[in-house]
Image (cartoon, rainbow, N blue to C red):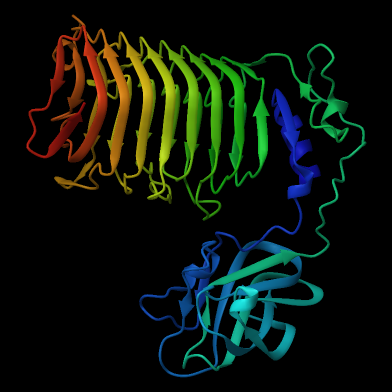
Length: 469
């Protein structure tokens, strides 16, 4: 995997790249993939076996055994091992099971004959079943007996590809690139030295510098992004533990640096990503930084200036019509950011602020914004908004705390949108026809408001702004 990832990124034109080959090897081909079962208890669905959470589980409905559960890998793969788990806190039990594979989901062959396996707390209730490599798109576990319960049970089904190893196949191999800067040549990406790196010349006039779907444990650094037609960098579909650092973006056609927790290609959560030491300038469509869902993700040490039509920072749970996970309870953190001359008008008469918090189609929670200065916003400093469907609010803003925030210089715009301008904080009462007022609650600690036409506008009865010293 490390070799494939490294080579692919070079082809995409990423300005600087290091890859951790030691983290590669034996990916779980079932992670986030669709799962079905012969039956399921109403509370314990088949999808739980591929969600990456050992605490959730599938349990067959009443009616006896045998029962089966299976994962669709999305494409035929050569597999030779499954890892099966039950919740780690459960008492020991034995389940008799077989592993089967199919190319079409209809005709199955046996990959591993039926045998009894003990799930014990001492081994984290985890069982590894190895078998001769075989081709399969659908991998099924059929359970015929369970000493712990009168049903089949499984919390995780991990499927590993045959022949995967932690060896970096690209190490020392010839590398080429579209360009390089100074002495940072393509071979540096394959020399095994994390202190060296390849760096391209400026990345200009492309659709997107990097769009990462299900990307794990990579570093994108030292990029100068110019005049893209879409995002600068966007991580999505289960991308985890990535580091976006020391990059500058100017004039992108969508969000400069984004994280979108879509699950249309991979069902895992977006988490443990760090975006830091970034500059976003003159974004001509969308925001300087944008985060849509996920948890345990951090954006820090960032300067944003002169967005043309949208907010400097977008924090939103809108799914854009794609399958998506909302925000988890573990925090999403935005820290130490300056937002200068940002905001604009778009989508008709709607105006956008320095920071936009939008509770929409998915849950909006766990938001922590700290140490942010908003200076001379185009229309307003911070705006709170809620999506409505059929006249009803979808999800409220909740568990949202902003600490050490300053808003300075939110003045009346004097243009066609003057009535929607000049607010330091604004609970938007009617963003556009057919919508409604912001819903929920937010807490500020250490708020500073100076030089604004109106420090706080909240004419709603549905949104509460708590302000602590």
